[in-house]
Length: 476
Image 1 (tube, helix red, strand yellow):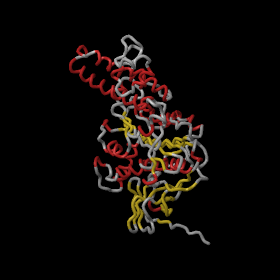
Image 2 (tube, one colour):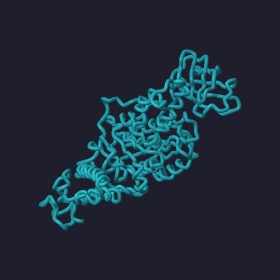
Image 3 (cartoon, one colour):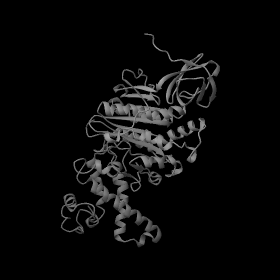
Image 4 (cartoon, rainbow, N blue to C red):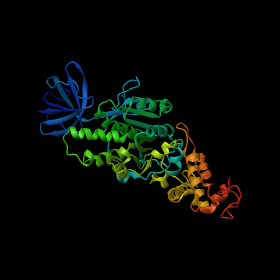
């Protein structure tokens, strides 16, 4: 039987930015993969962005520089871009479109699947549960990441969000069960790429990491494929091989800007701030590719990282991300200016699924109570700081001063840790109790008396706390 050969089309009508407009095609559909051949040059690759009658618009992954329409032919694959998934990706460093950067062989030998992916059937979803512990106190105590959750990091240019993302990827664990990390970096500088690669070298050597690096000087079209390839690889590891997988995607703002550039090249009508009108659904098609599936042991958890232009949380990228995801970790420029790392704004951050992955039977009996008490105390401390700015520090009461000391202790004792320092949850909660010790036990209204008594013997009988005694508010 003769193998059918896809026809080659030479009717290149126009080269427009990263796009080829091909006339005279037939049987071509959206998202179809294409190979572009030129006289005297290596083949290039592309995706069909638009197909209408005999016209196809192809986005070229390697860019259109040097393409001569007269000597160029396009061959369409008849299917979307496909990659071969499997364990061969683990321990590898690749470009944003899956080409090896580490000098190793091509990634072949697995199951071929399209990178477009499919949403998880809502009826088959299991609620996110059990924690993914990052070793970072500010996250593990107050905004616990849960298996199957999507929890973004909101940052501003100049803050160490890439450093924090690398630390999460290097330290995250799933309670000793098979665990993998897929890190997709989009639009990063060569220096940042080298730093990420060095930070994750140990995890890569252990065969637990897939690293995709799309550099800032590479074609912007590749940036649109990078998260899709990362999620396709992660889905196979999670739902076919039974691993718990964490996908870190940074920076989603770079991805959205690439989407805007392609949309403008296609001549689409712009929506808010010139982003395409389908930005919400496009982001949802990425963020919703995570979770847990009934009957399958694995899970897929996402930590997207994005920078807010000018710190504007109402900008379309963080705004739409907030609608789709389940909480956020917000980084603070003020904390960073004071030398605090990681500069997590505890009162602006939350994990909406934390109760499903923390507490009795999952982390520790006192975890949720200690977290709630810490947040409540920090809220009071912020009000005290605002009051102090109005009336002066000399007019503050002793109780107000205690809350000020608690906020300072929170920054210096619990939040501040080195970029390479990993803390167990017991260490983190132990530090949280030290912070709460700045208050008298009568102020710890969200923690059970039994927990206070166990932590500070001798205080349960007197909710005010014995004067001069070691314990909450007693100088211990």
